[in-house]
Amino acid sequence: MSFSGFFNKGTGGFWKPLPKTPSLPLYRITIIAVSLSITVMLVSFAVLQGFNEAIIKKVIGFGSHIQVADYSGNQSYESQVMTCNDSLIQVLQAVEGVENVQAFGLKPCLLKSSSSMEGAVIKGYDKRFNTAFFSRNLVEGRMFNPKNQGDTILLSATLAQKLSIKTGDHLKAYFVQRPPRVRKLFVCGIYKTGLEEFDEKFLIGNLESIRRLNGWTPEQAGGIEINVKDFNRLNELTATVNAALGYQLFGKSIKELFPQLFDWLKLQEINVQVILSLMLVVAIINVITALLILIMENAGTIGLLKALGANNGHIRSVYLRRAVFLTLRGLLIGNAIGLGLIFLQQQFHILGLNEVSYYVAYVPVKMDAITILSLNGLTFLVCTLSLYLPSLLIARISPLKAIKMG
Image (tube, helix red, strand yellow):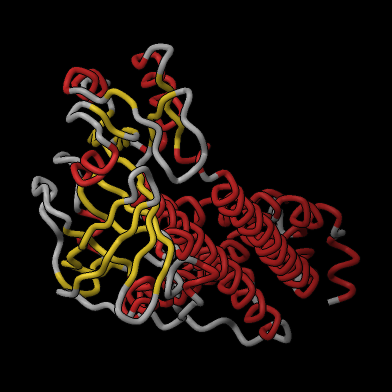
């Protein structure tokens, strides 16, 4: 392999076939290793971001970003009453960064159909109810009108199957209180979120129905749900909301309400970081090995160039350029494969999951331009910097010995 062959226009054209040398298989392995590394990194980050977004959206859709309750409230499914008038709603809505504020109440009951009985909890919302989440997760029927004061509900697919209920049916709800109450509920729609701990327990209705059952006034509710515009500011906005509430009420973020879920998501981030580190090591080792073989294979040429007056820096730049070329070719191939796989999964949901265990029916993926550029930039930078030390071997090659060996 001649010196001019390396120096000719960088590498003689990016997609020009690799020169046929005894080390050609090694160069191909290097390109494959870099390609595999960036492919695995892209897919891993896409899955991580997809899981985070899909699961957090579901949990927030069911429970909002921040929940406000009375300090004396307990952890049962029976809501403690709190004052929830228009002035309090306006105070919370005025907090910078808050997107939506809605009142809710919880009421446990026993559901009875013609074939079965199941325990459940009615979650009733007021007229400010943001129906977008449940509308997206409807599998049958329609969304109820939050401004309607009737006993119309959304039933989860899990409860509908257990009770053998479909859209348009009625079922009876028994409420254990003094005196006991019975209500005839109309099922206008069936939803499925994939969050089994919610789908097994909750039906969605109107807060006014719970107010009538509990004897609450129109200014009373079980709690308040707040959605914010920027999830990254959740901790800050939770503190701001609590400052606006005063001493009698308190707000908890979704992270505080479901710490196990967010700990699980953090664990996934650690796994991806480990994969990223391992893939970088694989890429670095292969690129360094290729450079070392390249230098040793051309020791005679290097010695001759030194004898003709070429300095170490000039010769080093030529071989570094070759190693960088192999890295870039591997990155391009790896990006084509990785982004192709991500696109196919986004469009066709090829890889499915057990929704009970993973909260989603298929592997969710998400990739943005910043992440793609960051991963490629990091891989290229680390591989390039790691080439400097092995390139110093050129300075140790003696012109006389190299020419004799050649």
